[in-house]
Length: 401
Image (tube, rainbow, N blue to C red):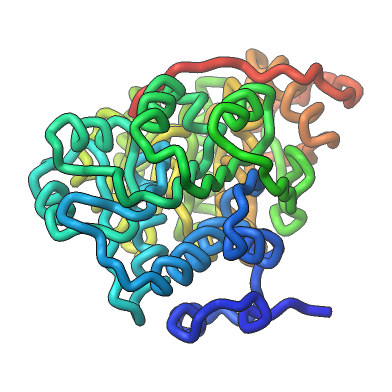
């Protein structure tokens, strides 16, 4: 029996917002999470990006806050959604705003890289739902611009990425500032040992939900690898884009400097390209992303951190110019295409130096990735190692955005 949004017990205002967005049937994570959230339970949900997870918490939160007449006081908030990056914060805030458009609720977003003053002004009238990155939230708190006395709901979105980026201490500081009696919702791509250790500190008897087998890649994504000399990567990228007439391509670079170089090389070949990463101003990042979504920009070159929050339903092509250092990031990267049932292409460049990373990726996803030969540029593939299950160990990384 197919679950409907109406059967989940959502209010008419929320259902109207869902209808406005063109959604007819809840995604698996929405179908499984909305009920427990509405019943007031804490949840731990394992869900990749692109599975509709934002709606899984935004829709029931709007429903619950709409049912309470009490408006938040000046500088107070009632629900807090923490996200790891600016782009994801902006994306989640947009989804929250769409979800409460037929109510009297107010929402706001707060992240670094832009002036804090407009964010402080928005909080002065009181905000029902605040979407924020940890660092900027603590900045606002230090200036007495946000208060938590009325807070009843906390959401940690993409908790695994927040830990990877070194936000664990900020998260613990924030949790200590919140009222002890509240509902807690944690969403993560995986439930690593670190995630479970964090959850034990603030989540009470959670309902556990998992809608995607760990580290699986979408069947809608056609994966391929091209073995190439490092010096020929730029030529290969330009050739694939031009020969296939790809008009919207997301390219992943391992470093900020590399992203700049790739975008410059493509532009010199007449291919409209821009790079986004942590060193770019927020204004430049926002404009580049908006132009890319609107298909005004042909190629967007991004680092892993900046790419969080790039949510384009029909993005057709993802290129791993550099393989990621952490195998799990491969799943996140190619998950940017093949979303919402659409098909997509994911091509990864592999050099002789990438044997270890390729082996880790293929062990993680449990399959050999098909080899694509490109005339004049690809080289003889290295010997494929047998697939084996990796040791359950998650690397620790500290990054800032």
